[in-house]
Image (cartoon, rainbow, N blue to C red; front, side, top):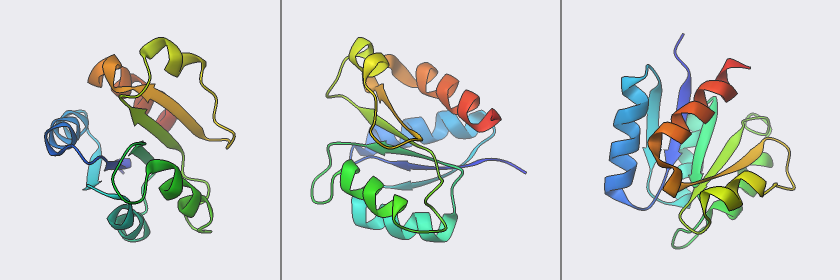
Length: 123
């Protein structure tokens, strides 16, 4: 069975390109372009991993992650925050206060994300 990834980002071009890249590597990908729809899609789709932009209008990534962790059937779903707000070096040293959450810089490109996804879903 293919692993399921929920990709959440408010930049349509980035969202589509990243989705295509993940699908080309064998993942089933659902997308959402803002926080509220991300919660609805997560409930329905039941992803194995969530890739979540931090800086979005309305409900930001931190709020989405908080609500996901408060939902029993999604609480153990790993989340990776993908953001343009920090550099690749900062992302490598940033720790989340919630286990299962990690940070990647958008500057690291799709190859870095793909490596992270493969490693995380292999466990």
